[in-house]
Amino acid sequence: MTAILYPVAANAELALGRPLGRAARESEARRRAGEAVVFATDAVGPAFATREAALDAYAGRVEDERTGAAPEPQDRFCRLVEQVADGAPPPRPVAPTMADGRRWPDPPRTTRTVWRLSVSYWRIGTAERPLDAPREAPQARAARKGGQALDADALRAIARAPLRPIKPQQPLDIGLFEVRLPEAPHIVMPDE
Image (cartoon, rainbow, N blue to C red; front, side, top):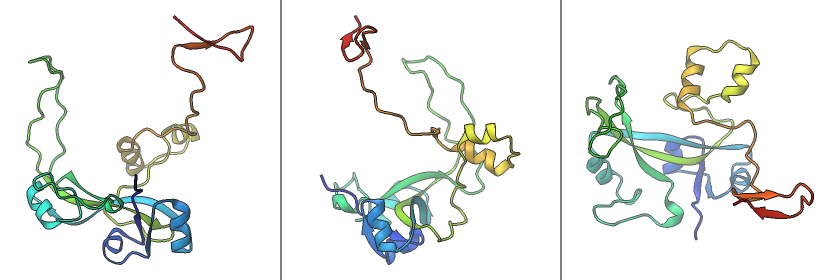
């Protein structure tokens, strides 16, 4: 399996056009940049009204299911994402229903969306974040326990970010239906 070689650049536009190099791992990216890097994913380029228009504009950069064309495995650092258009109201929540064997109804298409190219790359740590990039959210539990007053932008960033643990989860040393014997903790027994 070939690893994706992400561009090393100061911003997403430079990652597409003139990267400093490409690297699969952070240590390689740090060597290419000569300083600290962070992994970033930013939207770049114009917004397209339809997915087909975006696929036509970025032919060769993203996988096109219409023609079966796809970039090489190491070049898959771009993808198309659907975003709510600027100035459009966010989608309204829908109530759950149980109809036709489905819990959730199809969402109403009242919100106008656009398609943009999303580029994943190693951003040089000293480079400025793009203005339209989402704000980096603090870890929710640490922010809450810290007792500091959070502004509205920080609260929005926490609400939009996926849950992040305080520390990485440790791997399980035994299975879900296995237990260690109290009298012999080195023995793992099935619990059935």
